[in-house]
Image (tube, rainbow over all chains, first blue to last red; front, side, top):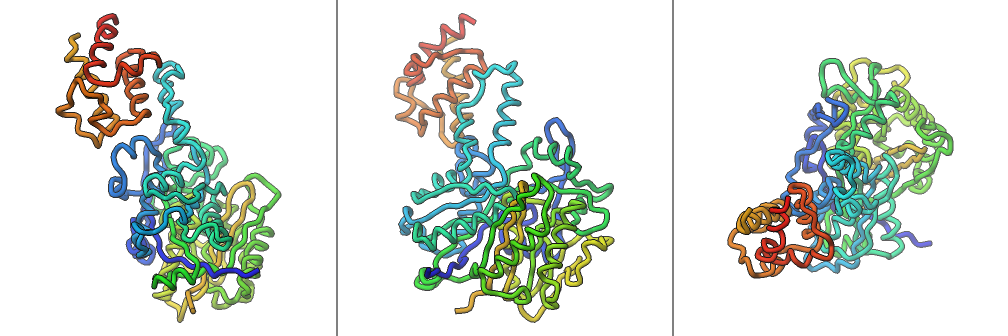
Amino acid sequence: MHQSRIVITGVGLTSPNGNTLEEYRKNLLDGVARIQMIDMRYIGQVPAGVCDFDPKKYQKRKELRVGTRAGSIAIYSAREAIADSGIDFENYDKSRIGVYVGTTEHGNVETENEVYNISKFDYDTRYWTHHHNPRTVANNPAGEITINMGITGPHYTIGAACAAGNAGLIQALQMLRLGEVDFALAGGVSESIQSFGIFAGFKSQGALGSHPTDVNKTSRPFDKSRNGIVVAEGGCIYTLERLKDAQARGAKILGEIVGYRINSDASDYVLPNPERQAECMRQALAVAGMEASDVDIVNTHATSTPMGDIQEMKAIAEVFDDCPTTYINNTKGYIGHCMGAAGALELAGNLPSFQDSIIHPTINVEELDPECALPNLVINEPLKVDAVKVILNNSFGMLGINSALILKKFED
Amino acid sequence: MTEDQVKQIVIDIITEIAPDEDATGLKAEVNLRDQMDLDSMDFLDIVMELRKQHGIEVPEEDYPKLASLASCAEYLTPKFNAK
C-alpha cells in the first residue's frame, strides 16, 4: 500500500516552564525546572506543574466559564500551532481539518467540582450544573477546539493514559494517509492538576513524588532518591500534513514522522513491562526501516518512580545495546508529568535539536541510580553533537499501553 | 422587595454568566436575547443562580417568563416577597 509521507509543519504548546516552543526550549537548555506547591482540595499542599498562558488570548470569558481547563489548554495550543504553521487558516476548507487530541483522562476534574458544589447544598442534585455533560464527554477538549475555531471536520480525543500524546499524533498520521482529512491538529492535553483524585490515587499507590527541601527537584528521573511523579498540566498540538501538500504551500517542515508503534503489555494494570516496551521500540524502528543505531535521541518516558525508571532503562538497554551515538534524555525533571500532553510536549522539547544539534539533559540527578546508568544518558548538562537526525519518543501508560514515535529531520 | 430590586438581581446574575456582555442600559421591555448574546444554556444558568443564590424555583413551564427584565420582575417579585 502506498504510504504518504507525513510531516509536522507547526507546533503550539503550553508547559509549566514555557508558553512557546522557544521559551520552553530555552528553559530545557538552561536547566530551568518550574514546579510549585498548590493547595489541593482534601489533600493540602502538593507539588504540581502549572501553566501560566493567558487563556483570554483566544477565548471569551464566557467560553472560559462554560468550558473546561483541558479545552482551554487545547484551544491555546491549537491556535498557536496554526499561527506557527503559516497556513491561510481563514480561507482553508474547515471541513477537511481533523482534530485528534490525546488525553490520559477527562471528566474527573469537572465531576469532582460538581460533587463538591452539591455538597454545599446537602447533596441536592437540583444544584448539579447542566454544563456537566458537555464538560465531561470524552471528546470535550477536541470539541472545544472545533467550536472555538469553526472547524467542521472530524474531532475526537484518543484516550491512551500517558501514551496519549503520541497516540494523538499517530491517529492524525493515519487519518491523513487514509485521505479522511487534508490537515490535522493533533497532540495531547492535561488538566489533571485540578483533580484531587489523581493526586490521591498516586499517593495511595506510593507513587506521588516529594522532596524535602526544593520543590523544583521533586521530579528527578534516574536519581537514586527519586520517589514518585509530579502531576502537571500542559498541552502540545501540532499541525500535520501530507508532505506534498506542505511542499505545495511552501510550509516550513519541522520533521517527518517515519515510524510509530503502539502495543500492550497484557500483564498488569500499573506495573510496566520492559519486554513489551522494548518490543514497541523495535517495531517502531521496523516501521521506519531503521536500525537502533540510526537513532540520535531516545526521549524517555521515565516519570521519576522507583520501579518505572528502571524498567524503561532495561528496555532501552536491550534495544540500544550497541549504539554509541544514541543519546538518552528526559524532560519530566523540568515540568513534571504532563500526563496526556507528556508525549507530545516532550517531543516538542527535542524538536529544535534538528537545527541546533544540542541534546537537552535530564536534570535533578544528584546521585545516578546504578540501575538506570546507561552510558549515553545525558545528565544535568546539555550535550552538543555533530548532528541530530532521528528522535525516538517513548510514552507509556497505565493498563500497559506503550507507544514509540520516530521523527526524522526532514530531507527531501 | 421592589421590582427594581429584582431587576438588579437578574442583571447581577446575567453579568456573572455572560461576562463578555454589557448589561448596562438594558431595555426592560425588550427580550434579553434581542439585546445580548444569550443562549438557552445561559437561561438555565439564570434559573440555577436564582435557585442557588436566592432559593427561588422557576419551573420549566415558566421559563418564558424570564424573557425580558420587565417580565422577570413581574414574575419573580412575588416569589421573592413570598420567601
